[in-house]
Length: 218
Image 1 (cartoon, helix red, strand yellow):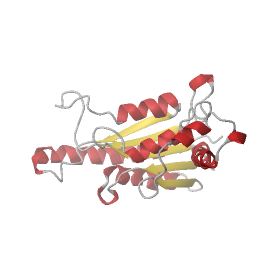
Image 2: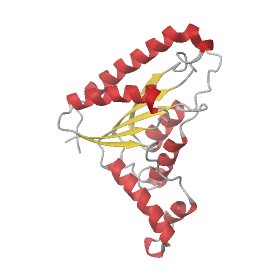
Image 3: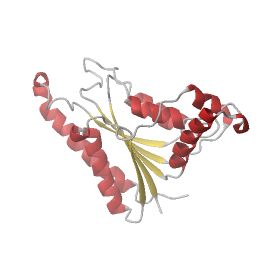
Image 4: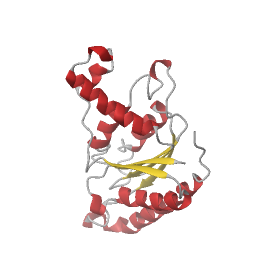
């Protein structure tokens, strides 16, 4: 049985392009994987705590010497890492906020990236290496070559580095651009491009969900 971990991070659920495209992926995924299970985590509705001194210290202190605070912090990390490890595939929907990722997703990453457990730091194998991750990244503008703010996208490149480089996932990225065009009169000239980008993202999400039909478990 295939197990998907789906994480949403947009703070505007009612108008979120990233959540909308993720929902398309989920719909097709469930059609193509009728016997699969899904763990869904909405980091806005149910945020994880930011990594604090106790959580860092617990990684370097023998468990028998943990304080109560360190024990609680370690339990949070262990729970999130177990949830990560139990999945065969991943779906992350992440909007760009101020040219970076939402703090709620950074908090989750800080909890699950642990040297010797989930990353290859120190020579240890990545526990989720090779598993497929579909990353949906939305942005209010466009930051590709030739645009006025080319190079201002610090969300997608960062996530590709972390998810692929540090965690070893097989990452497939779907981008949605110009999401602010329908809401900002100054971007009216880009409305057609925005609609095309959104439609293309939905099509890519469907294709990717179907491409994972033959996902090997275990």
